[in-house]
Length: 112
Image (cartoon, rainbow, N blue to C red; front, side):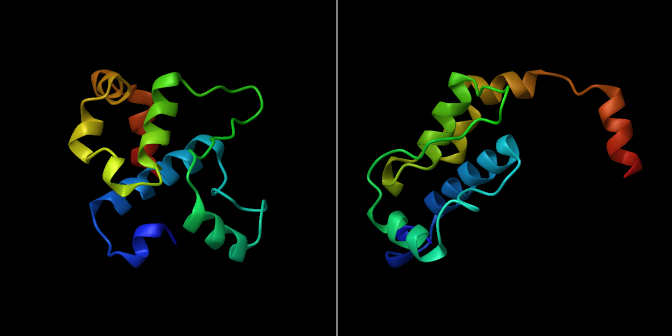
């Protein structure tokens, strides 16, 4: 639950969820799991006024561009989060869109 849950749900909440999904894909674990109790998560989310940190798995490092996207998507102020269109124009997303998928990945995906 995030602060805007008390003000109404909108596209900024979707962007926040995207940031949390990005964190889970990168780390392999859901954000906040095993760190604090659900009631503390709720309280922390209501009062948080500083950027969330993205824990890096051992031996891995997030790029500066990815960290910037994560931090902007999870900004405590919904009005300061980027739009989906803003995100499409970031260098990190543009590099991903310009990189062709390897055929071996596509074949593996199709077989599943």
